[in-house]
Image 1 (spheres, rainbow over the protein chains, first blue to last red):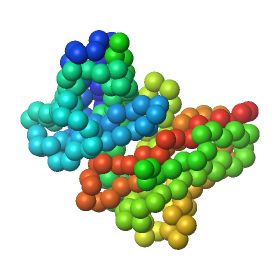
Image 2 (image 1 turned 135 degrees about the vertical axis):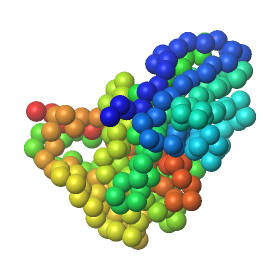
Image 3 (image 1 turned 60 degrees about the vertical axis):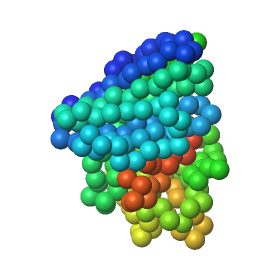
Image 4 (image 1 turned 180 degrees about the horizontal axis):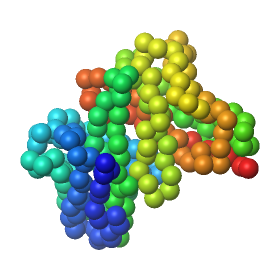
Length: 115
Length: 113
């Protein structure tokens, strides 16, 4: 069973540009979530998409957006990049463990550097 | 305001001994707690979870203990192996928040042979 695939793995942008990251979830998973990981703030929830609808959103500015397609693939976009947006962006698809917890399966991430 | 805290940034343990990773939380409304481990250049990998109505869950070498009165949970790894060397994240979730987990900042475990 293929895991969560994220592209690109690494990218460098300059301030003011925009970036689009892509995520393909595990086959059959309809929920895709995005997280930002930085050394200072750790892992922070960005948003979740389920059946092409945003179901939940974290505390990030409107420059961060996403969408999900009918095949469950998801993209996230960051517009007007700032230096502080440099981070590892992780995508996860979810299924439940037998205990009932919402278990996330993460991709390897997209490392964004903003110069 | 950190709702989930891992106060030890790092832990070193010898192979074969027990590793104990700790996590504190402030919100008594969490429904589940989860542990993830992360190797460099990989995404976090789910290890084990525990419901807030339990006080212990075991899976092979990994056991998680939950002390609700102290708002504290711990992950025990017995016996520790060099391959366990990774960053371990504690996370908490509320059912109504879906996949919006709240993560601690992680503890780097080093297991020496």
